Image 1 (cartoon, one colour):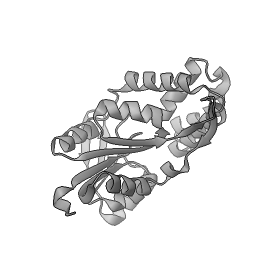
Image 2 (cartoon, rainbow, N blue to C red):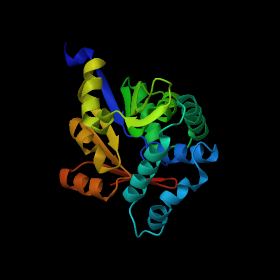
Image 3 (tube, rainbow, N blue to C red):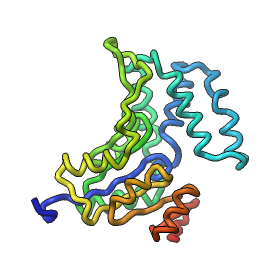
Image 4 (cartoon, rainbow, N blue to C red):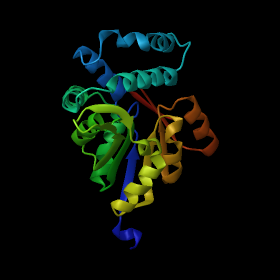
Length: 230
């Protein structure tokens, strides 16, 4: 089948790219507030959070501690409780987005693009958030359950390779990478950005910024109400 009959794809990371924070951070906070996780949980990432705020540590270190904390405590949580919290987080934060990527999503959708999101946050909160924004397909981390529908702490490993997921989505949904667009903010998005024709590094971390400079990729930074094209 020729590319003329296939739909162009635009692929987005979510956390820090569209959403002005991390969905995983927000759902972790909500699980603590709902007392599904113990209140002492925040001590497990307090040091890396403080180091990041004081610019003596990296955001990546902070997020890794968030991930480890979430993975330690999610085991044994009833799925229905987890899903309820995920939906509440998505509804509450649905408008907490960057102007640039929000408008880019609307623009590409109006041009007939297939909108794809790939995130390392749990699929439940990713699904709700992206559905509200009008995405056609979205991938998030899948946390497995046992036969009693209780989360067992295990995760599906496929989400860790975003490039594989993009290729799969292109094949399964009759899409084309010709004219494609990709938006990411960290080095974990590089493999995806290499696959698209129009890579955009939005509010990139240092590693992605250096890669973008070497390869001539556009860099866009949004601060307060100003958008800079570098």
